[in-house]
Length: 133
Image (cartoon, rainbow, N blue to C red):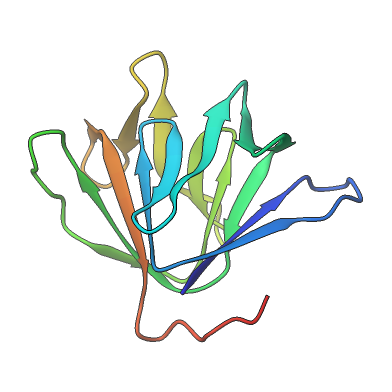
C-alpha cells in the first residue's frame, strides 16, 4: 500500500495519512480509484479536507508512470521514495526532480521524457513493506 503523509515541516501539527493501492495525480488533484478525491493543489499547498499542507511524502518504494489524455503511457520508473513540494515531485535522497506541475496548463512536465502529461500513476512495488499508520 502507498501511504501519503501530508505535513507542514517545522510546524507542530498532525500529519494526515491515507492508505491507497494506487494514486492518480490528474492535473492538480490527487485521487485514488477506490476513494475518489484525496487532495487538491492550490496556492502552493495541498488542500486535504479543510486543512492545507506544504509537503506530501511517500516513504515506500513505488513505480511511477505518466499518461496522456488520449491513453498514451510513458515507461515506468522505480523510486525508493518520493516527496512533493511546491508542485515538484522529488526523490528525497538526492532532491532529483521527477516532475513539475506547469501552470496555468496544470499538466505535469516529466524530466525523464521531457514532455508534459495529464496524469501520473503511482503504485507500491512488491518491495514496499506494509505500513501500519
